[in-house]
Amino acid sequence: SQLAPLLAQAHLGIGSLGMHRIPLRQGAVLKVKEYLALGLPFVIAHEEVDLVNRPEFAPFFYQAPADESPICIQKLLSFAEAVHSIAGYRQKIRDFACRTADVRVKMAQLLDILQAEQVHRQKEPSRAPV
Image 1 (cartoon, rainbow, N blue to C red):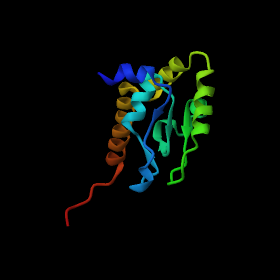
Image 2: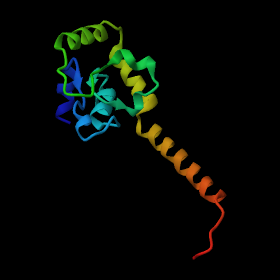
Image 3: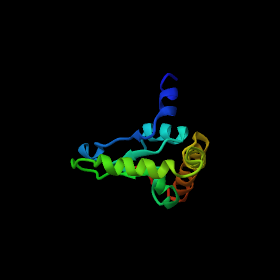
């Protein structure tokens, strides 16, 4: 709760930049969800699952390489300036979050997965104990 007012003043959020070290290429990072909810553009160095195949959201995050190479600060500044030039960018990011990352959306996705798994298990022939 103390962090929200500070993030509301921020121009850019810094997401996970070292997931490649674990080694992970893809993630669903809580920090990114917080940035989305606050309407804050951000930089990441992994594939964020809620952003895969969402080209309409590409202007609102900076994709850094998932390696040890340095991130060019000038490119980050240019990215931030470009996002800030988009009218209503914070609300657009928040609207995207509501459509893709809201807990109700995530729970509906989980329910769909569980129901599909239940249907799949019901179709499997029962096996006699060995």
